[in-house]
Length: 391
Image 1 (cartoon, helix red, strand yellow):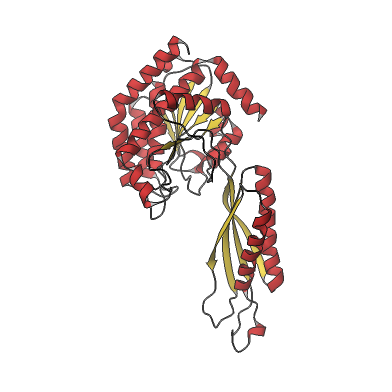
Image 2 (image 1 turned 90 degrees about the horizontal axis):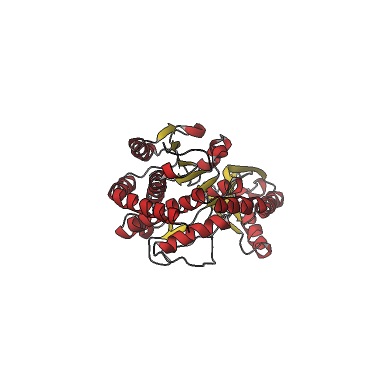
């Protein structure tokens, strides 16, 4: 590493140390005021107000979403554009049990930190506010509206019970199956009815038979959302909702068809009519750029963070769609004891703990320092682009 880059990274760390109190206060404020997908008005305003106070120009309401924003560092010039992404939606009933209050301030801090040295680097720095990661696909809306067309590299960090860098995510699509039968008295005239609930149960049995023949990385999980009204009435309507996940786009497409066939077979076996709906946006698998991931890992370790190699289950995120379009990383940083599940009360507590905010500051530094590497080294950026094009 050149002396110039080393010096710039030290300045970035000093900058973030200097504003750490404000970042922590904002993280606590967002935690104490959880807002669901597409309703993150206060979080968006607090984040953009801070960015404007620091000289960023801010565009709000992007991609048809009131709570999306793009903020641009006032310094910079010709060269690659780096976007640090902030998420800030909460979970129903659990608040910030996925740590999005920390993701919001990590993206903010990384953008402010790198912007502070952009008078000596070539390129542009953006902070992009991405609503509705929890099932709304905000990043997909931003992709479709062209927000990421000017972005060359995208980065964010997610809280976890481990610090991981190269971990990807599964693609996912939500399916809704509505079965329509014929009501009848379940005791006196059952032969006159068509049992829509039987079609749902048959679908579950078919899916369970399918599991033996799916890849280990694939996941299928579902719930019954309507099972009828009373036991003595043959259910004329029943419904189920499934999430179908896979590690590769082609695998996801194939598995979706197989799960749909399971429902078709349930309808055929019972005589029910079937309506299939693909709910919301499907998320593509996350494919971390390996060169960019190595840069983030190096900076994590330079800050004293131990990065683990981990093989295990994965969830899904709309950051996967970003990674399919441009070089991107979505590393994780430890804020909780090992094996603390996300989307739990324990993880929510960790997201508002001293350890959580310490990790937030480390993550913001690591991203900003990786940004120095990308913008300060033509060789690093070239390798990132070549790796992405090769994939």
